[in-house]
Image (tube, rainbow, N blue to C red; front, side):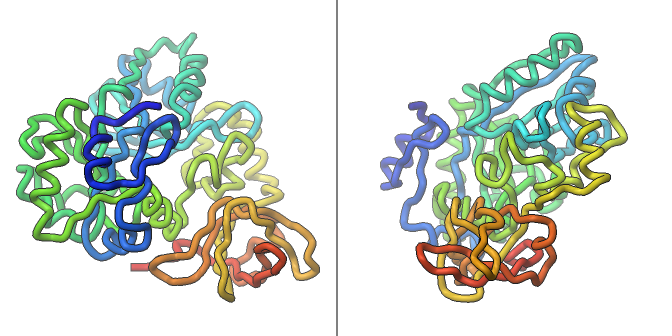
Amino acid sequence: MKNTALSKIHEALGAKMVPFAGYNMPVSYEGVNAEHLTVRSGVGVFDVSHMGEFLISGPNALALIQKVTTNDASKLVIGKAQYSCMPNETGGIVDDLIVYRIKEEQYLLVVNASNIDKDWDHISEYNTLIKAEMRNISDNFSLLAIQGPKAVSAMQSLTSVELGSIPFYSFKVADFAGVDYVIISATGYTGSGGFEIYCKNEEVEQVWNKVMEAGANFGIKPIGLAARDTLRLEMGYCLYGNDIDDSTSPIEAGLGWITKFEKDFVNSTALAKQKEVGPKRKLVAFELDERGIPRQGYDIVDEKGTKIGNVTSGTMSPSLEKGIGLGYVPVDFSKNGTKVFIKIRKNQVPATIVKPPFYKK
């Protein structure tokens, strides 16, 4: 079990620690609902240092990224980031990730913690002929996500950069919390604004302490991974291992908007055909019409009780106080307003297909 550079601090703060993707991570502090609402209305800080980071450099860096990801990284300029995914050879997704263009010939790929080794091997396989420079810096860097509508105001005193002027999916390399060079990005995973801080492991304790100090007057609190999950689900954002995996295509998962067929990438011919013909199933968002909590793995059934799909993510929304979830259903059941049922134990609880996000500011 790996620890992040802040594990002892989390334990000292009374966090409930759990194994997650091979790391000892804080799942909650004072409780999921309270932490969730802190981020929605104020400001909270997550330690997400378990995420993986790869540096891809050199004259062939772009060619490698273009081959292994679905989005068009040639559109990136220095200071911009892009959400993307890596398709496998059989129609599924190796991982979803964020691509940052750091320099003219250098990119940072931020990947999911549970997929670090798998992603590295996959990219390396395609790099055999392309020969870009690859560095796995995951074990050397930490990542904090400072999220919520008060994040900018709370943190502005810690940097010379105008935080509110960093556009969505953009970043600055600048000073923060007494550290001269960190990446300050605005990619978000909560839907409530804020930004992320990438720094070296030996710097993160200082950054954490100054963040908590600067945010004290704004009610900042540490937030665990459980609230991160409910926050992202209210936005309808996919979580790898739940809503997307090696068996789900980006077309089925509603990620056609990051799948650009103007270029050649892994399995692009088959995915283009799937887009043209149309997938047989789709990832949909649903709200329960009655009381209940949908959970991952629950059956989605039709009015006759016939199974038509399964829940991939589900929770009781702290913001909306109703059951919400994502799941795959046949295309015929994917239209907004369609009525389905979620099988919760012996009950078939009615639900309605809706357009995400569930939470609207």
